[in-house]
Image (cartoon, rainbow, N blue to C red; front, side, top):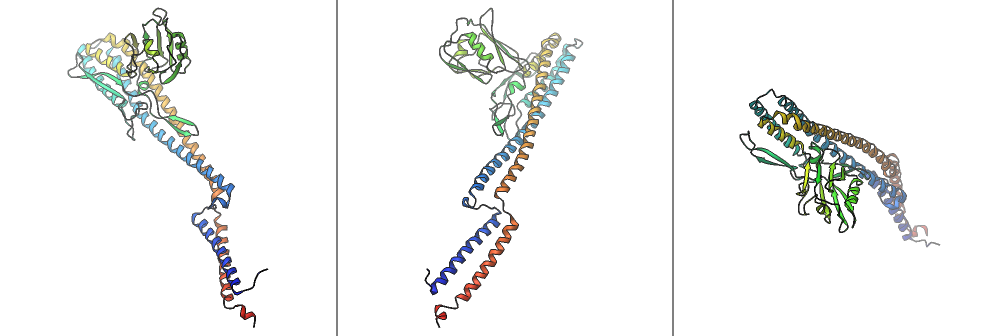
Length: 414
């Protein structure tokens, strides 16, 4: 039972006006933001779906940007690698010409001048820097210079020339996520890209009585391998072969030492992460020496870089040694060309995969936008119609309230 009074009409009208203003304000907010859900209470289930869809859309858009960045980097790397391949092809032409034996020593020395300049251009390409200021062929050490040049005097050269090129990067390669738990590599390791021959390490230390003193971890070509206490040299070799690294280990039948050889053209990267297994086997020096130039004094190393092949070609030309040019030097250049061609093909394959990720993420972004729109977007036509209806109702309420306020309870008691 309600009490009839002059204040009752005012309270009822004010309550209805506030309710109408609240609904009208909510409609205005929806129209202003073009979003159906303004707070979780509007539609809790749809709001939960909307949050997940928006999160997925943000990730997909970032994946697309990552893939585009990688595609650009692969394209830039391909330019430097292709130019390097052309340089090595020209070097091979000079080697074939110099190996015929029809040219004098002076002619070969003149050819050596061009070889020396091409060597400098090859080093420049190997130290290339991308548009973001990072080295392209330094592995994960992208802020440094991948290859360090040592200058020296060579018989026949009138001034100091490049006598050695050392790799200062790493074998680890940064990875970028291009899809859910799917990654592509960024920079490439220069001691794989610009290597000529498979490298082999021959240890001359007798390891027949070797036993690992404690649980240890060794790194072979970037792969971590666990060695248990008491493991023999045969167990170490078996674990290296089963690790998945591009390295094969064997036991020398004469010296009983362990030999390591890469399965393709690359530089061996060996390190004692914990313990001293490789050091005890005589493969590397103590842990204070940084790879890859940390091989033991008793280890014989074969297989050099593409720069070593070019330096050998130039020095042979300075000496006028046609026989050396047509022998090991030419074979090493051919191996370097094959490796560079393979790496160029791998780079192209990665570029195509990055492009495929870009296209897929673009489609996924469209689908995610559709889901977000379905759950969160406003039906604009319906919202405008509802708002106009609420405005009419509010105007009618105000008009009715104005007429009611002209009277009081006394008017009905006369």
